[in-house]
Length: 77
Image (cartoon, rainbow, N blue to C red):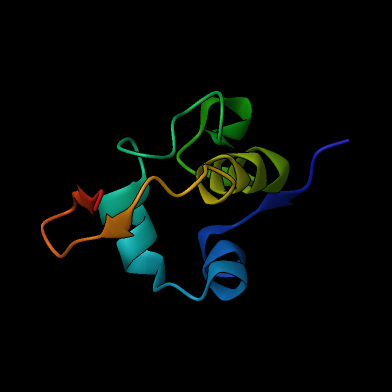
């Protein structure tokens, strides 16, 4: 069974601003049908917590391949 959250509840769990989730993450990182749904085809958006949690853990468990640099790359030396 899935846990559905409003943007405000999701923001509290992730410690992000709800506006940041709506404007920056939605449709770039979080996709409709995977990470969120629109119940009954309406305007309201409910986020699927388990899918978001899986997405976050996928990136946090990748092995470090070097020292992270400020430009987004890695130093392999």
